[in-house]
Image 1 (cartoon, helix red, strand yellow):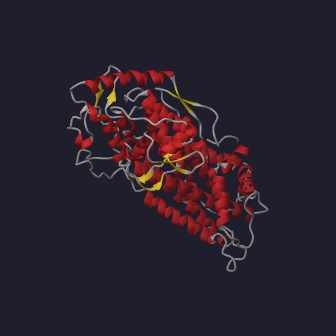
Image 2 (cartoon, rainbow, N blue to C red):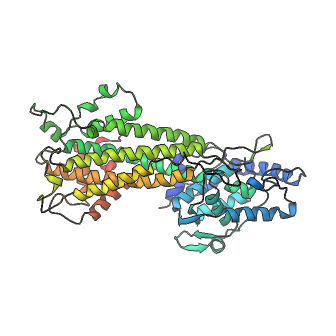
Image 3 (spheres, rainbow, N blue to C red):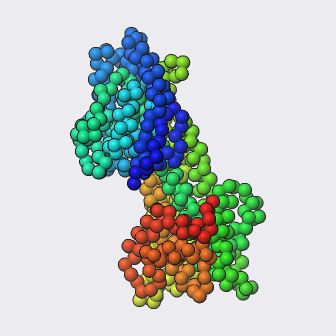
Length: 515
């Protein structure tokens, strides 16, 4: 669905919301007058260097390990074409449209800072691609995260030149030249430095970080909802979530998660049913009792990632860069380490939140630990298997998430004849985080589906109004307890509810906004 509010792209930083709106919701973009002026001023300096007999890296020389060769002016247009064509060397499946749009927007913003030396006319072609829904085909493999996301960005630059393949607004695969012609966009013959400026940035990994942050902000709330439902279903206690206990360890994420759990469990009939003094359990299992500690640590990791992403949005990443005083200087800001680290941190947090979710699910299925629930929540245990294999699905995903949590950013592999001898692997960290986010969505969906069934089986005791509202929302798409049914479609239905934030919305219809 297209967002009708135009996002202005100028030298000032974009917001997370603006990136998401353009990438996911098709918002149009507009280069501001300040951006055009800044680009024109920087271009004047690049043109001066291009005419100088003194070699200037990226303007009148080759690139990477070939930077020692001074390029004759008559060959510089060919130099730009050759750079983009040779670097557009990606392989594998197509990258998702939302990722490519985020990458394009973030590169456009860097151009708009006036620190790259790209002509306004070139930047406007990138603007037009976004606004007409033309998405260059970018491939899964090719970026080492240094110098930035070279191969992915080169596939975009190739489109600006009118070459390569794209997806049009209808999603059809089309030759770039034909798509640009249909849209009335004139391809550009790149001038000195423009090829390098279009491809030398961390925009792909940053775009995927921002999209993952958008997802995880919702999923970590969903994890609190799932935990509250499981605590009720397992006849746990909410006393451990008390504010004074949580304050003894003042992590902000933990405090927010515990506050959500208190709110979600307020006025629970199931809780009240075992507060009559007959319950002999001293304390709940870790997967219940420590829910806010784990979810809270994940939230704090997300907050750190947001700090890094905000700094990146305030950056102008290129090499060389045009400074305010007119100097053109080489630098190493294209290295993706800051982004790569937090992408890996988030994958670790996601794996742990999923792991504790799976443990709660397993407890609800085991008669030795579920405190009166039927085996596997089956209608007729032995004849029916209930949610036995749903937990297998969770376990398989959690095992995969643990493998995806192995950091990509600790790896490096030299390239470009040892000129680029230490790389970030940030793109790889971002790609695996996207798979991790999908996995967490599915794990939480299985826990919520299982907990809703368990809460129904606790009747006549009633859940809290908030968790009851979640059960009611699920019952709109998934039937309640009964004999075994084809389970995969039911899991997918709840996966959609989680992904669309409908689970949190149902709870918040009672509680108001959760923290």
